[in-house]
Length: 137
Ligand SMILES: [Zn+2]
Ligand SMILES: [Zn+2]
Image (cartoon, rainbow, N blue to C red; front, side, top):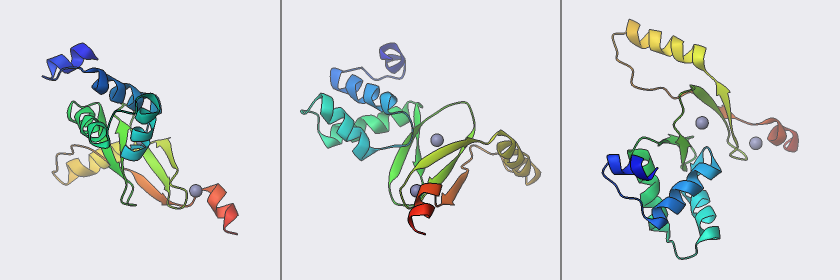
């Protein structure tokens, strides 16, 4: 990671390393608040803006991307090669992933048909998960 950052023109500091490590421990769909909580469990001296700045850096060097589920909270997802979609429960804010290769292929073909050069996809389904539907019945 240290070497990787150096090739991108950034240097690794202990604080930065902690933020990076915490992000990758949390896994997927992490909000700034969640990451901040996690970092604070390990080092109380790190401020919110440091966490936020480093999260932006993780995106900038191409290790994560912003995802917006439409509830006003920006989450950050590790960039992986497997194309996936999101099921987002608007009630409990849970995010479940599903494989979306065939759909991505369809979208890529569609873009090509319309003479559009696709640069990325977002496949998101919003609604209510089973748990929340049961609760509201
Ligand atoms: Zn995801
Ligand atoms: Zn739910």
